[in-house]
Amino acid sequence: MMRKDLAVIFSVAVIVIFWNLGAGSLSSWDEGFYGGVARGILKTGNWLDLVWSGGRWSDKPPLYFWATALAMKTFGVNEFSVRFFSAVAAVATVLLVYLMTRKVYSERAAFASAMVLISTRQFIWAGKMGMLDATLTFFIALSIFFFILGEKKKIFLFLCPVAFGFAFMTKGVGALSAPAALFLYLLFTKKFRLLKEPLLISGIFAGLIIPVCWNAIEFRHYGKEFIRGSFVTHLFLRTTTAMDGHTGNFLTYLGVIPNKGRPWGLAGLCLIPYFLWRALNNKEEKHVPFICWAAVVILIFSAVKTKLYWYITPVYPALAVMTGVFAEQVFGKNTRMLTFTLAVISIAYLGYTKGVFNLDYSPEIKKTAMEIRTLPGAAGGMLLYGVGDPDMQFYLGDIGTNVGEKEFTDLTEKGKVLVTTRESIGNLKGLKFTELFERSGSLVVRVK
Image (cartoon, rainbow, N blue to C red; front, side, top):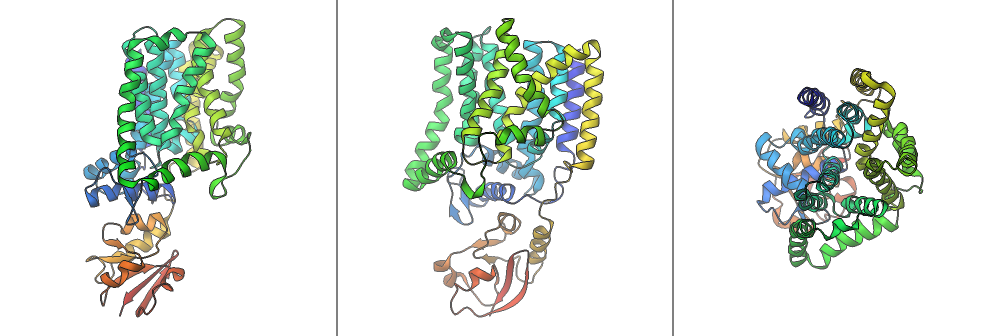
């Protein structure tokens, strides 16, 4: 039955996540931004010193950008490549949830949990977006699964912190929810003896090698700029202040999960106290890892002052497991048929009413960029000055050279196409140009 379950789950996950993946246009800000950084790797050939808009960029760990650059080498520079690694991670997470639930509970509960996850709105969205959250979620889930397995087979204790290392290389401190959840689990179960296991200790050292080496290299290259970007901005400021107006309170995500996590999110939240009661009253220890996982993710991101709804994505596998287990308790031998049917209905509903398969986020910007590419002389190289929109940067990045005010005079020549903005062009004193058109926030001129 396991093979049949996996075949069904894999097929559904691939269809849902990969359907229409390369269509439409990128979402601004993050998809265009991350796609532009990955494209920069191919353009410069430098896999360590990431670039954005012509300048050095070290705000985020590089794993997703490395994977996306490899996808671009394979599939070309397009929307599909930008979203590919997220999609792979999402499908892998669904399979992982099945294997994890089957190990701890039963095959029926495992099938139900996988169906719940792949029909959850925000998880589908994360898997179809060229962003970091689906990948982070996969490595957090993998780290926790390895720890669960490691209680019986110690070799998996070595792999647990290694998986955490990959999570850290995906989104930095956002990965800390994995060890925090596991520490809470040890506190709850009083299994601190596991911390003395030689394989776990050696795994911690192995898992830290790549993050430590990468941080050391970036600090050597960028110095204070790296500290300011990676730690001051993305650790301290996002934690202690609401950056870019993304504000909320400690209860924000308790509203996000039922809304963005339709149709299962509310059920998952309500089941946390239910399974906590089962764990405490009936001494059912098997529920504890998933309670700790969900609780820690919610608490950590609720404490962070900057609120973005996709931050909470790593909670959904844990909620899916609890929902699937409860579904088996309710539906019994009909669990597979009913959860599959409900999942299909949910996916159809989300596709029809919430547009989860519509990935056309910035059609006008893409259309404008394609029009710019057809201008006489544009294909031979154009200049980009003050173009802040990451989607425009992405769609013109292969033929456009980003310049600042200092470089502008040296690179400008008669007949050159310049893409800028109405606000920025005023900084280029003495520039003579013919205005071609202004659209989607970009001003396109030809230098006289």
